[in-house]
Length: 503
Image (cartoon, rainbow, N blue to C red; front, side, top):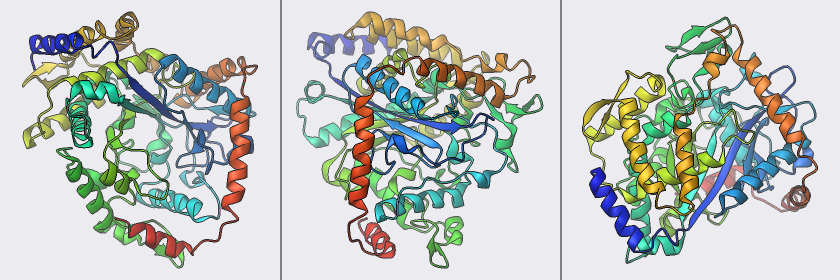
């Protein structure tokens, strides 16, 4: 779509009142490692005052016992969303004692990967299956990779806004709107990486015993001088087993069938691990994926569903409700990992991806999408690096500026347009860590601790805030945890076999 055509489509939507009544639903899931005063991943249990990680809807854990995940409700107001996330951080910080929430996506020094404890939940089947899933991740990929943190941004349009995009707003059309968004997001993910990438350097211990092509930066760091997001590179949060799954998001049925096959069809390297060792479960399945959520992509279709149903079942029966943007690095300069302007920038990118025409992705384009991602991940801050854009090779900076011009056109018609226009300034901001490490004289882990302590100090200054709702939620989660532990349940073998039979 040319800029003139995009401008024409924007004008049509504006005249139809689309932007006057635009409803955007947003939620955030934010992961952070607990790190001790020595700059190492904490070996302590999840703080009891934060509630049960199995039953607290706002504060849980991801792979590791030390990897906290904070989950907001859905908000339509950005200020309310940010305030909730901030107060969650204040509450968590209040219960960390001498530990800090690590400010970066890539973990600090890891002296012994085996010392990283997978998250523990309970002896209930719901708790056991979560632990078995994490044990499977450890067997498949090792613990270091699973300690990489990030932001998941959940996005949808309200029902009235969806109606204005499609005259017939049945679920099939809604699915097509979101699938079109996802395909375009894949096309423009290089842009997202160039703006949100904040992980160009890693501690040397992260790559112990692994092949890589990074450069040395001092005695304790590896890096790429022009990298944006090593988190999303082959040494980061990636799966060798998923590289050839080739999901194009042509249709919801196609997506679900490929996810189902990836779970059910044995994959030799994971089959060799085995489902069990003696009587202990090692993983939930031997496919490329153990469960649906193991699929690593920068964006995924989602729907909230009954806890007794698998994500596959929920999407199959009810369709797409929202998209989950996953490929976002923690912003190390922000105490909560993301700023309000970055949320607004994500709004612009996602609405842009909805408005643009979104044809199916053919083989040639799929290849270019992967090439663009790879180029920007490793070389996106190099002014002479190129990508494929608008059917030709262009400098990344040139292509980026063309996207920004169209995002400005969109920002001008958004509600609170001045805030969205101002948010576009963040496109050019850099986190600056490479320069801060002074040619490697400073270790990434040491610098990360300085940042993390600054955030802790700021959060501590807000501890007089009203945190009662989080305290109540934590207490209530323990009551619900105790109820779960009184239920009579089948054996874990029966439970997992029943779970797997639902596909």
